[in-house]
Each structure stands twice: as structure tokens, then as C-alpha cells.
Length: 313
Image 1 (tube, rainbow, N blue to C red):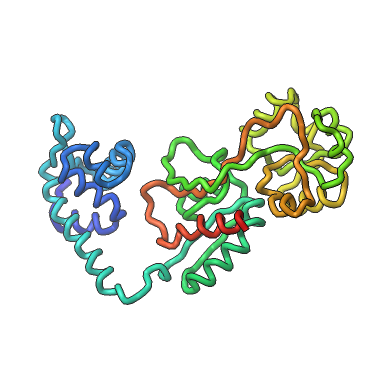
Image 2: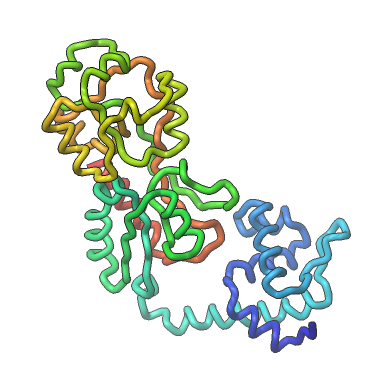
């Protein structure tokens, strides 16, 4: 492969600017540790970024054999192209500085059934008020499908929990909070009169849950309560969040879930958490996740602000 300044410049111009910045940082510091610290990322993340850049180019940019990381001859050639590209990007931002860059482009947010019901309306209102020119897309689906869409760049962010998150990819995660799971019922339910309950007490009533439950939650339920099968206990299953809320408020059915799902009803005194022993041990973290190193809309931090405001309201 013949590598020229022109071919490197043309190729680098189609790559993530962050990777190009990583390349320049490593060339400047001569150390993955120091370069990662300067870029405020982890050393493994920097290493993967550089490897990804080299794989895309099909050449080695750095010689890792010596104690200090050194540029290869091709790497020296690429440094100048990288500097030109970053300079061009800076010039672009300077030229359009009079425009609000936050209003340009689109942001695609993945939501589960519960998070879409809770936070979909305030997200739409919040972005419409603060960034009316931004193209906002809310995608509602099962957690596993949402993370698949995130990895394949069909969405930019997933609002949910980490249970369906693949372990082989590094994510940027903003944890909004952690919420207790357990069994809930309407205020005044006959079981509210008992101070201590077991799942045998619950079995006298219809018990519902979201569908499907994450595998990690199913495993914890089995281990905690000794169930051979969750299907035999949770006779009512639905992926429609509103239907489960309606079921709980208008019948003696008991619903397993997280207190964030019923936060409004809980605060209004319409729903109570039953004192079932043993207490379900695994809380549900509510997170906002994006793929580490991937450039998304600068308006993305507004997602966390809106959700936190909604929870606190």
C-alpha cells in the first residue's frame, strides 16, 4: 500500500475527530498513560481508539516496541494531515460561530416502555422549548433491541438500566439514580394490613409484572424467593406500562416493579410498596448511556437535566 499525504488527508477527513485528537495527543506525550490523562479518558479507551484508527487506515501509526511510544514513518506523515484537519474544523466552528450549533442536526433517544411513559412527554416538551430546530427522535423498544440500535448507530442514547447492556463495549454512563424494586399494590389493599408478608401471601392474588423481565432480574427473583419458574407466579404479564398501573389502581392485583415506575402514584398516596420478606436485593439503576468515544449532539446533556427535573417534580 502506497501512503501519501493526500491519501492520508482524504482518509482522515472521514474519521471521528476525537480519534484524530487522540493520535495527536499520543504523538505529543509519547505515552498512553500521559496522553489518556491529557484527554481525560481511560488508558484502555485511548488504546482502542488508536487501534481503531490504525485498523481503518490499514497502517501502523505508532511503534510500541520501545519504552516511549514513537511515531512510525507513516505516522509522521499522518500527523501533518491530522493537524490540518483539526485546523479546518476549528475554522469551520469560527466561521459559523454566529449560529447556534446546538440547533443543528438530530438526536435519537432510545426509551423502554416505562421510561417512555414517564419521560417521553417531558423530553419532547423540553427539547421543543429549548432547541426547536433540533430534529428529535424518540425510539421505544425492548432494552436488548435498544442497545443493538445504539451499537449500530441507529440511535444515539439509551435511557434505561444497565442490565441489558453488552459487556464487550465501553459506554459513557450518566446514572440518574437508583430505585428500589419490590411488590406494589393500591392503597387500602387487604395485604397492607399485614406488617410482614411472604410470596405465599401474594399468591392469593393475581400478581403482575412487566414483560419480558431482564434475565438478571429473573435469576434474582428465583434465588430470592425460591421460584422454580417465574411464569407460574407472575400470571399477568404486559409490556404496556399504563395497563399495569391501571390494573394495580383498580383491582386487588399486586405488581412487581421499581418504585420509579409508580413514583407519581406513590407520592400521591395511591400506591404503596408491600413489606414482602425477604426484601428484593437488587435495585434498578436508571442510566443514560452512549457509546464511549462516539460524537453525538451537544444537546445530549439536556436529557439528564430533564429527567432529573421530572423525578424531582
